[in-house]
Image 1 (spheres, rainbow, N blue to C red):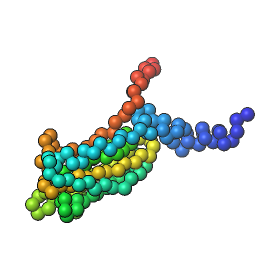
Image 2 (image 1 turned 90 degrees about the vertical axis):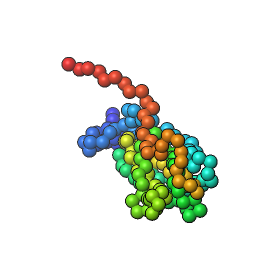
Image 3 (image 1 turned 180 degrees about the horizontal axis):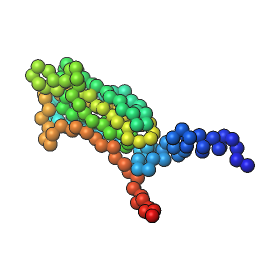
Image 4 (image 1 turned 135 degrees about the vertical axis):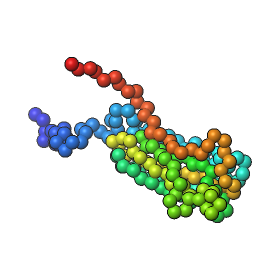
Length: 161
């Protein structure tokens, strides 16, 4: 005989429009996988002194968006890059901070990272900002985005007549 709790776990999510699968059972994302911090935030300093500022670990709920703004300290006033430690299902986009982005000389002093969760499970990230004594001089341009990176193979859909 099927118990009431077991039946409720299967039927109630269907009634409420939620998945009966555990949150980590996303079809394309391994929601447990974390991309490590690569220490690339100072790559745009091109040999000039560089310091790192980091955010707190920030949780992003399923299908939610969060943003973090960091500002460089006076001793190292210019943003030269950023990096992050994050779950694979989080997409991070850099945008100049609305309130304190460029100084009067046009140099970037603050940066906001917007994290969008592309999966049905919570994830987290920590944002690292590279700050230097000189403005960005890196080759190849300033990183704008790290995409959500699904690691599960996509299964072909069956054609039903």
